[in-house]
Length: 102
Image 1 (cartoon, rainbow, N blue to C red):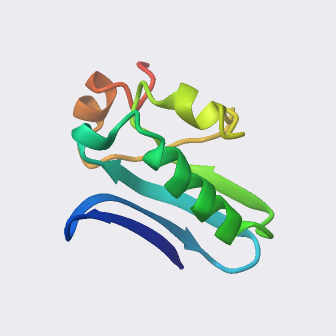
Image 2 (cartoon, rainbow, N blue to C red; image 1 turned 60 degrees about the vertical axis):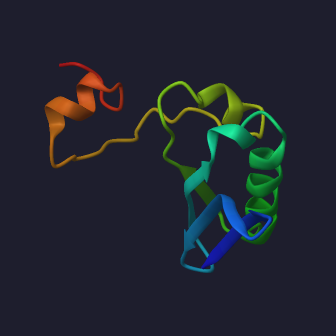
């Protein structure tokens, strides 16, 4: 439903999107920046713009790369106690830190 892109000299350097139903649920996903642009505030700006666009949904979910939780916590996200997932390669997802070990 919503997307933001950042370009530098005609080259895509950052992108993010929100999948949403327009009322109840919005899902912030695929926020990505070139390594050269991380730490510059650009990621925070893209997420802030996407959150502003998604405002009005009753809940906004996020699926993050392990280790980036602090970044999103500073933007208001809180860890859920009920989130669950099925990956096509459960063992690899567990090894990369996406799933808890049994």
